[in-house]
Image 1 (cartoon, rainbow, N blue to C red):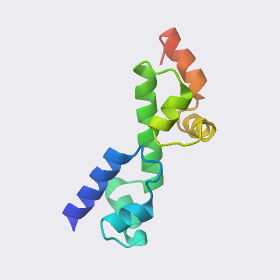
Image 2: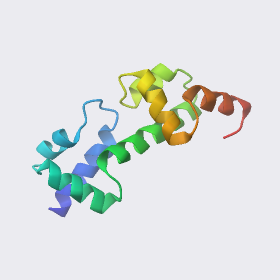
Image 3: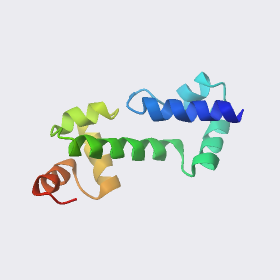
Image 4: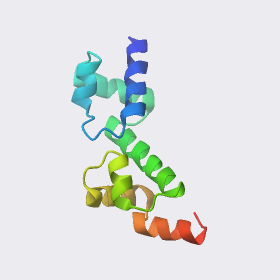
Length: 111
């Protein structure tokens, strides 16, 4: 069963940009009850699935911005957010800066 959890976590790490990724989808795919998988995930990773996904996506967004992509819309879609405005809210909540402010800071050479 531990191997199955590792496979599920690996799937999440590889498919975080899939806008349709969800607790139900992953639970079904790896034959877990959603409530059980949710608890198992939190126990093994230390945070809930949605919080983990959010942090993973924002970290990837920061990497994309640092790598030269300057379009908030493009980064939003590459990180699994179908709505750039929602992505901007999430990004700001996680980093304390809007994507535009983050990009301005990158341009100045600061972090």
